[in-house]
Amino acid sequence: MSRERLSVVVTRRLPEAVETRLSELFDVQLRDDDSPMTREELVKAVKTADVLVPTVTDTIDGGLLGQAGENLRLIANYGAGVDNIDVSTARQRGILVSNTPGVLTDDTADMTMALILAVTRRIPEGLSVMQKGDWTGWAPNALLGGRIGGRRLGVLGMGRIGQAVARRASAFGMQVHYHNRRRLRPEIEQEMEATYWESLDQMVARMDVISVHCPSTPSTFHLMNARRLKLMKPTAVIVNTSRGEVIDENALTRRIRSGEIAGAGLDVYEHGTDVNPRLRQLPNVVLLPHMGSATLEGRIEMGEKVIINIKTFEDGHRPPDQVVPAML
Image (cartoon, rainbow, N blue to C red; front, side):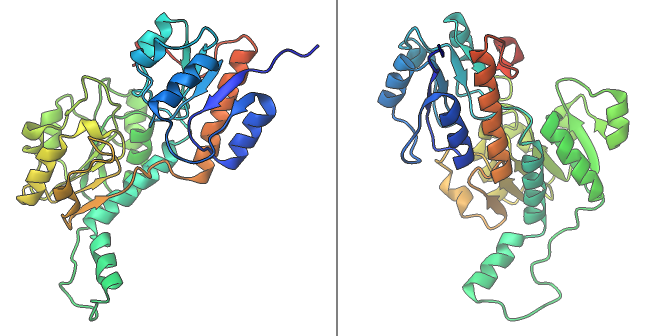
């Protein structure tokens, strides 16, 4: 006699291939449209499901977990970041949390390089000229940007994505510098020809490009605050494809408006979709709608990791990508 299938609730639309495979394996409840679940829908989901599959747009806090039913035993997050989940409370209630690390490394690193090039070579400004029909022909001084070869790149957070960016930047002829909680092993440093800075302040003051790649934690909130942004050279630019809260967005806007920072490329924002309107008006700021991981291949691989985590849990084993509070 076959055992009853796990009840799985998915909070957002996922790629069709992922939804199909979930339906084959589990008793799954999928979304009809691509809107985030309301708080009421999330409460209903945690009361009834064995497994919840949320995304970064869902807040799985202590209040929600307090209303979870006895059946909820796994939160299989569709995404690598879990700052949207109260992992400690989940653990106290006997609910495991898993994520999908590693699969988006190359996609995010590619987008980081795209932003560095877009800001330094003024690509959106050129695009705007063409779209408006204002181009009158080539001119020696028109839309002059800067060459990235030979410039110093300061990587803030040298994890998987930071290292992937460093390797790409090195291929473009950039000089790689980094600040990290822990210094990399000497052989990795040598391979990337990366220079370690124990002092973030000292690194920031000397870089031509700052690229942010650290997670959102209490210690990284406004790590690039007004004081630190003031240390940047007026010719330097900053790029962020990690978490918006790491940069003080208002302070960044003020410094770019006053010409004290040359530009920025952002894929994430401090207040989610509520982007500072003054930031949107600046021609030397490139803003993207959280597209860093947006490749079909990457999103399907994320789904495959979710499925493996759920299937391993169903078979009575520890999910391979289990998250515990000590990791955060």
